[in-house]
Structure formats: structure tokens, C-alpha cells
Length: 135
Image (cartoon, rainbow, N blue to C red; front, top):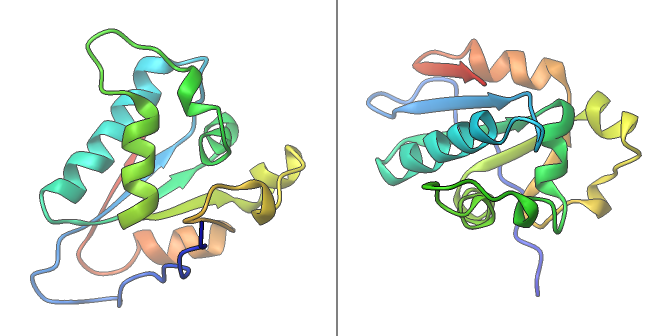
């Protein structure tokens, strides 16, 4: 399996482009909130939006193999399927401090995920035409 090319943030202002940044701050301890955040991000992609998903706290584990597969939530789409869609078409970023606290490096992440810091997050959410949601 080849590693996809790293995704780069979209330009600061592209007229008519809908952009959404979703920040997830919880992990499997809050499966409904976790599922809602990932579902919203995936639905935004399906609706034609440019999506950036930021994983912080225990949500960082979602970017590693095997963790999304453990979440079962009645009446919700499988979290691993939604995650895989986002890894393929959205920018998925793991918080650098959160990764460090969990001894995670980019080598531990699934293809399509990257590690970056707060400055990158702030730059993304302050760009023109961006809507940010935090779960």
C-alpha cells in the first residue's frame, strides 16, 4: 500500500469554496460526541466542502490503526468507515502536543494523517471563509 501525498491546507481565500474545520477533543470515552464530530466532517465532505479534521486529546487515537474499529454506537455509521473516508479526501491532523503525550509519531499514524501544532490550527480557523466546529 502506497502512502498518499501529504495534503496541504487550501489557500486562505478561494471565492465560493466552503471550508469547515472540525476539532475533536474526545475519544472512545464519549462515543456519541466522537461519532457526531466525525459524521459531521464526513457529511460536509459529501456536501462539497473542503474539510480539515483536527484530532486532539484522546481523539488522536482515531488516526492510529485499530482504534476506530472498537467503537460501536447503535444507529451510527461505523466510525472506521467515516474515518477512512476522511483520511482519503480531507486533511486529518493530530495535535503535536497530544501526539507527544501519547508517544505517537507520524510513523504510528494511518496514511493520510499528519501531526501539526496549534499555530497551524489557528492559521486554518482564522482564514477567510472558514467555519470551525469543536466537539
